[in-house]
Length: 292
Image 1: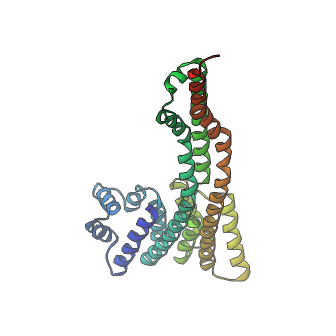
Image 2 (image 1 turned 90 degrees about the vertical axis):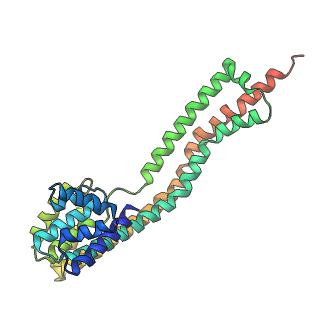
Image 3 (image 1 turned 60 degrees about the vertical axis):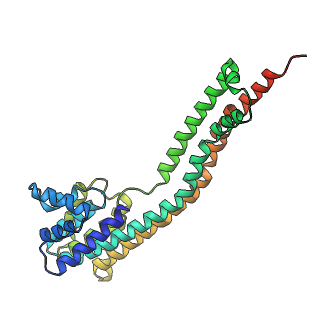
């Protein structure tokens, strides 16, 4: 949702700037219609913060906007056009992240539901009238409960780790390529553009390009030089492909998650159900059965 909200705000800013509003005036207009992020940014401006720093302090996708705004101002690229491009980038990235979250929702919900299964078995014993309190008060019953709880906690930690690994990585896929395209659209040389984007990336949390990103960007620039094709269009195409790849990889991780969650289910959750739900019932039955 944060990316979608930012995209809508950035699109409105682009329209205001295209109509001739000054940057700070555009932000104040946006704040006047109740945009909470614009209100926060305007408060920082009133406190004396520079505009780029005020935008960057919002975090999340607003760091990408701050970087693009800074690069555009340095190289003299048309700010309204840059903001339209960034709005579309943020909207596309948010859509890809939403697809991944939707794909993860079902296996994640199933995993959380199954974690309550051992306790449901224990409550079932109470509902059926078994004296499970007396059963778990015995050394054997206490051992079953202790072992079951340990398995439940292990299953919870294991499941959370699997879910965390399956979630999308932070940041906006393809943003490095978009920033380079912005720098080049303002007439900067490739060396100057790379320097500007590198400085912007250092300032943004989690935005430093990895080895794969750098290799992809350098390949695009090499293709542009060899084929004599404008690098900006190739970079934007590479950015779109990066977002498409992130969406596909996220769906694949979600599909693999459904299978991976069977492991803690079989290793921890089902044994915990036996220890917490079934064992106390058996102990209760044995305790109530008179010896011959």
